Image (tube, rainbow, N blue to C red):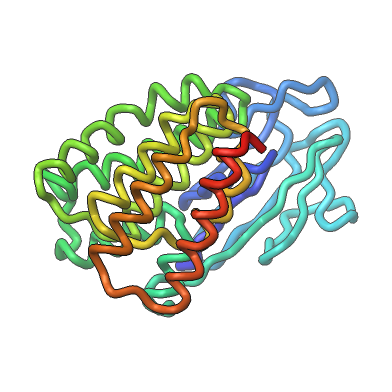
Length: 274
């Protein structure tokens, strides 16, 4: 089954199978506080056959790629949905079985991870240890994404703080964490750091990747280069410590060395205050 996401206000919201309602009502999965938006404005329905959007009888209509829809319309990758002045972007990911591990590591979405864990556990939900923390995080991330979309990052932080603390405890206790799973945590940590302007979330990323002795994936480094310099209390020593751990702990490729060089550049910017 294809995996669909809705990008709204720089946040990616996972669209699970079933109905996802957009409107002004707080009961909607995506609630938009705008008089131009009806209480139940539009619905996105995700099935085995794909994703479909329908106008729920709104006053101002629903546009897909600039054209008003009059009936249920199938959605495709990069389709743009407009509701009043609000624009959203649909993205489509192929099932896990059709990807390579390298591509998965760069995708960083919770649904692929859940599928991967189900395969590893024979389809049984995990009940203990790291697997339980990761499974809980995958579910809570969807709730947190809704909080981000509603402009409530403090609530997103409250939702996610538990799994973050639990995973760090597992790693410090010697547990191994799959790099794909760790990437999911890193994505949300970057969002929290950006929205709340708290360096502690970026520090969590460096600590976690240092404990696992993993080279951070390029998309995470890209985000850190944007967010890091804006964080008042992020220290260059945090970055240098991580780079030193990776340099001495593993044999790195030319590509990975380039990624570490980019982090050195971030440290220099932090030291210079720019």
